[in-house]
Image 1: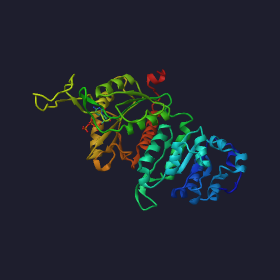
Image 2: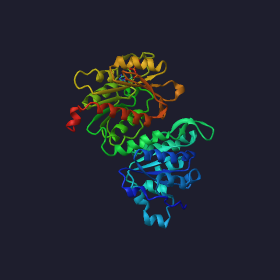
Image 3: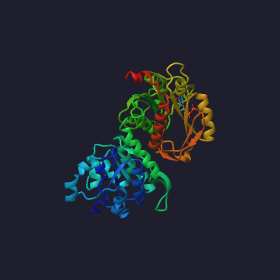
Image 4: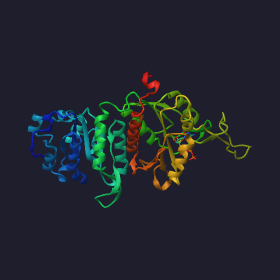
Length: 426
Ligand code: CTP
């Protein structure tokens, strides 16, 4: 595909500090990319565009070339382009690769390492951070193949912004719309600056995640349906922003987040002990679904059917890990954050829970079965602090994690005192 030549001198000649390579693939949301380029440039970022064949059906090289004031690339086999700027150099001369919109097809190519056009080749050849703004039909987004590709990419450290919920060009409604331009710009700025001075560098974070498992006998146990997705995403986001991050997790099927120290536990008591051992910390986030009760007796031998009839299950209360850490007199983390899984009066119960548990913030989410949040990929969060409540739109769990991590960075910025362990680099 031959694209329009540069209309102006390349922006890179002005040696801008931070450069974005914007890869536009073939979704209807591509029509928003000239605006995206404008807004990125408003923020002082230089933008160079790569347009896929599919992308060029929705937005013209001329439009992108005009707003980026740079050449628009599209052809892997162009001799002129290759002699001016090889595709490897193209992907490495940027500080960030931003894929917006990212189609299901391009995500699949990225996950599987295909490189059959300039966009996929640049993505495979890069050694720079990659931020992806997916846009596709809701069913395509939820398809197991797409979700597996997204999980693979996330595990490799690729950042996502969106998708968000809304009406789609195809007439359906759901999760799959490309994030708003302003949110993509904010995420791109964060991604670019996160690789510079890390806002959480020198800070230490402890995060709990997943379920706990409470044994009844050597083969039976009580547990819950927590997937660990939210807690793992939070640990990954904090680590990306430079925090030394310890993830204390019950059993999950998730890969260890990159750059995070993982402590695997089973029971609530083990989780508490691992959290205490991980302190001191600047921030502790309690996202685990801790079993409130455990069997009062753990039988050493397998319980047998026999003369005793049906056994009665006596329960005893587990320690409240969040409350224990939040009420520490010495060594309390500067910021203690809890979650509240509620099925009714979500905000009201979360406000009461915040006070009862003595934590600074609560992220309340509605886990009634019809919301599909428990075990799902998104959350609708009410962010409850001492001063008020902020209701967030439905967000992918990774986006919730990113937003929370930035709130944590902002709050800790006000607090110059770092946890001793982080100061000494324990
Ligand atoms: N939590 C904890 N230890 C426990 C129970 C809960 O650390 N034994 C933490 C969770 O990780 C979460 C918060 O406390 O951050 C709230 O969990 P939730 O299950 O919503 O609240 P409960 O304490 O179980 O209160 P309730 O049963 O009244 O909803």
